[in-house]
Length: 232
Image (tube, rainbow, N blue to C red; front, side, top):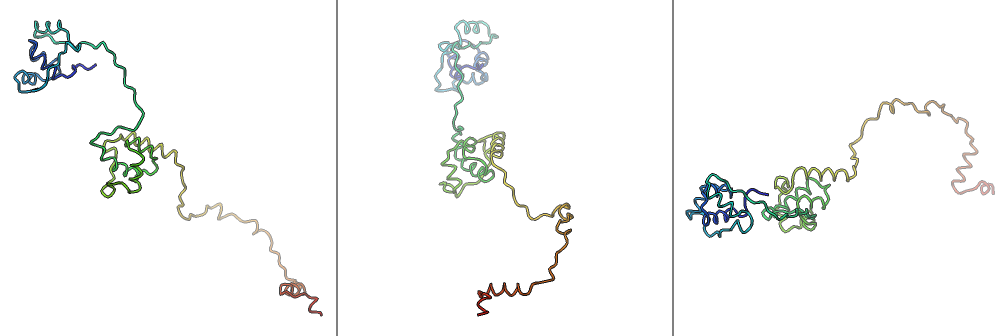
């Protein structure tokens, strides 16, 4: 629990108007500066603020205030709340982006699309907190402000942390299959250039004696004439 009461300035207004506590005691309890408490008492600060009773909301007791009024060196102690608030469960959904940063999301999306094309739409949505429609419009240059968009690092804009960006990039690199890029012709290894083929060791057969009759018979067959037709 925080050491400061709820609505400290309104609590200080009530304590100044309804108790005899010193400015230092009120300032110590509300975690304010003594000069600010003095300004509240003089009417120079907190004008129009309605005082809040710390006794009614269980932050102080009447006995604690009376003890502080009797001893100026005593410091008031904030009462512990008897109500145990459950811890807020983390909701699963798109990242919340402050209103002041929402107009910068298209620039961050353009930067991610250009510098990390391997990222999926779901990963960009987790990093920037946007929708698939916005990502598609930025990628296709159909966004209403596409002509004036400039790529900007989402880490620099404060939309995500560098650790989150590196994690998504490494995750996308693992899921994307590696493609081999042709780097041009290279020299053959020495084992290939110095290897002697088996054909080099075999003797070359020469056919010096040719059958002349067989050659002419083949030529006549190719020409479409048969030897029997010539004899007739």
